[in-house]
Amino acid sequence: MQKPEVILADEPIARSTRALADEIISLLIRVGAQGRRTLIVALHQVEFALEHFPRVIGLGEGRMRFDLPSNSVHDDVLQDRYGKHRPGATGFQDEKTFQREFGCSR
Image (cartoon, rainbow, N blue to C red; front, side, top):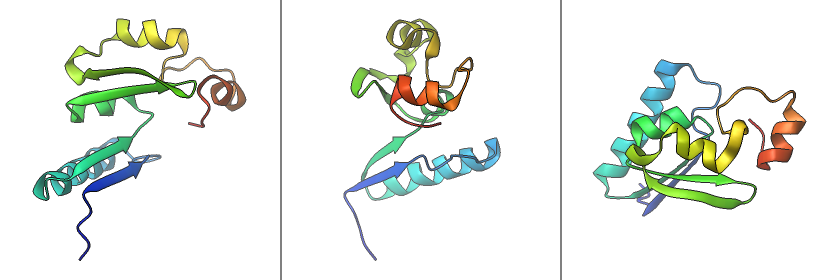
């Protein structure tokens, strides 16, 4: 069996139910911890990142917006870095606007 030093998970919970998403993230965390591996998970759901991970790195417009312990990331931090179009917030009129703002799709 392969034993990578780093696990990269790009949107592993996209389109999952809340229960399944929690299960997937818990599994990734367990696998990472058991092998003392670095776990990097890309998520658009800020609430999952804040609930499950000790450190959160916010990205936007092709650059790093913040790198903070999850307990330091509050709505004011997100508002300051992303404005009214923070990740996970509703209010985009369409997918093209979202893609233009963040350089990715939901």
